Amino acid sequence: MKTVDVGQVLDEGRWTGYQKLLILGTALTIVLDGVDNQLLPNAVPFIAPEWGFANGAPFRNALATGPFGMMIGGLLGGVLGDRYGRRTALLGSVLAFAVLTISIAFVDSVFALGVLRFIAGVGLGGAMPNAATLASEYVPRRQRPFAVTLTIVCIPLGGFAASYMAAHIAPAYGWRALFIVGGLVPLVLAAVLAKVLPESPRYLASRRERWPELVGLLRRMGHTVSDDTTFVEARGTAEAPVAKPTMGDLFAPRFLRDTTGLFGSFFFCLMVNYVAIQLVPSMLRDAGKFTPAAAAGGLQWVNVGGVIGAVLGALVIQRLGSRLTMIGMSAIAIACSLFMARMRLDPTAAPLLTFSLPLLGDISLTPLMGMFLITGGLLNAVQTTMYALAAHVYPTEIRSTGVGTAVAFGRIGNVLAVYVGGYALDHGGPPGYFTSWAILMALVLLSLAIVKRHVPRTSSVEGAAVAAPATH
Image (cartoon, rainbow, N blue to C red; front, side, top):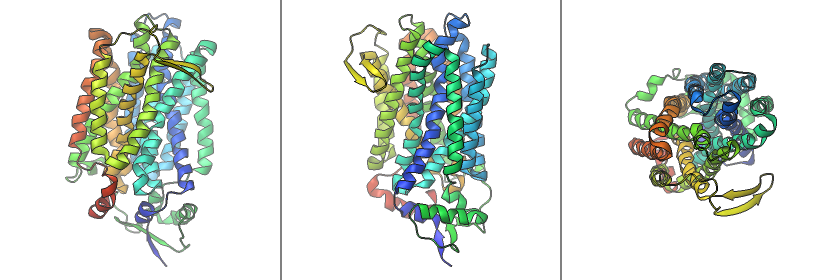
């Protein structure tokens, strides 16, 4: 009988094609999470005139209920992922937000809209921490930041899809069609992933009755293991498991500083991202110069930049570590936001460039949309790489709880975002709105500086692993 340390095997193992397919599976759930999460902000410019509202202000409470539900979902999803499995919690979350999103297509009041967005938000909130944790536990340590960020980067990719749908489906078929499509697709995906997506190997190692399942999974990952293998991790064996994880573990002396920094980072970064996500379309439309479809284009460019920025950020983190990369991106985002505060909102401005893409047709990039691309990319890049940072900070037995709780605390910033952004708009117009981006990113920068266990530079990864094996 051979004893295998699952954590060591995965951390030092190969980066196989099968593992890449698993990352793709988790990433697809987050694409659809991003779609469903951003459907309402993109739909508001179409719903408001149909329901007799002059602008998007009456929808601020409905917009806030979604993040409030996501806050609760993040807490529940993380704990359920640690106790019952990351895969089970992830697929349950997908099913929940899919069904509730379809239901939104049949409402006729702002109150009903807000109630359904709250419940759907619970499902949306539970998906992200479990997808991030699952992705981190499928891959070797050296690929972990990239794998997690590549999964979470699908949030802005899904947001881009939501903006594109709003600009093309809503004018032709009505805003209700957006929510029907946005709910049916994840239902189909959940059915497929239930057949092909395995549980986390680290989670399986802690459940002796599921070791045969773990043996098969490790073999598919390219490892040679026998049927009678005994599995352990650095924290112990499955026969003597640690106590069930609790949120109190996050505030133990060795994690207190990191937890404090992560909580602040998620709070202010999710707030600034949702100040953008929730209000960019309404802000542009209410300025009286942009059509609903053109207003959706602003958020579309924010999300395009988010995809590009997050992928580049993940690659740079692997090289330079997360401290320099994330603090540097935050500083540049502050400068860009202040620059946007001085720009004119002119939909007739001459484009910087025009090009064509398959399916998307001719695309013109004006100076304003170019700044949405750059600044939104930086905001999203810091947010998405933050999940990789949180997954790095906490050990396996509390990783889902740690990521989920940090995200849940950040959701408080989500809930407040529409009111903070609305206050900035009401009292400072678009210049005040963009200045709020800069202020919030400055607070993100300070919070990131507090975190001690940043992802190390590539050259020091192995040394860090030897010095502190339990943190990975």
